[in-house]
Length: 149
Image (cartoon, rainbow, N blue to C red; front, top):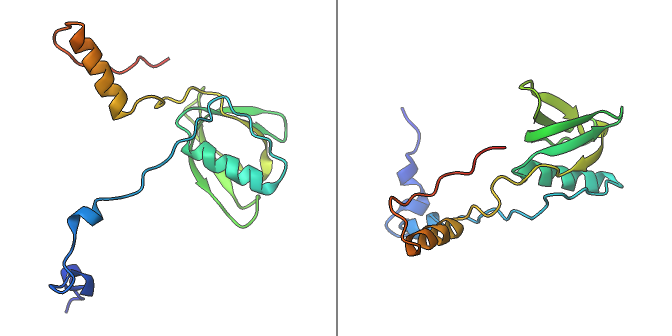
């Protein structure tokens, strides 16, 4: 015995056919220009908001801990709990491959210290560079990625 098929759902019947164009539309992510930003973390809400932006940031973040130590690296995961002690980030430090887990309660400061590696890398920017090179008469056109620092 098997359960109902996906195609047999009421929204997939002849009376209500699927509209593939409507399914393909999804809201994009708005990336704020936060490179160089050092948020003021006066309360729990400001810390949580700053850490969400840090998670979405495509560059390195410098995290200052209660003991005065600093970790610079990429935040690749976070878990938001009901308290700052039960919430944490996971970060890959720039100077090591060992991942670290840091509780929100241990964070006293953040700095968006690294270059946003994807800034200006839109499709429109790529096409503009392509046409500039083509107009200049270059052959074998291709846009190579920037070298990592």
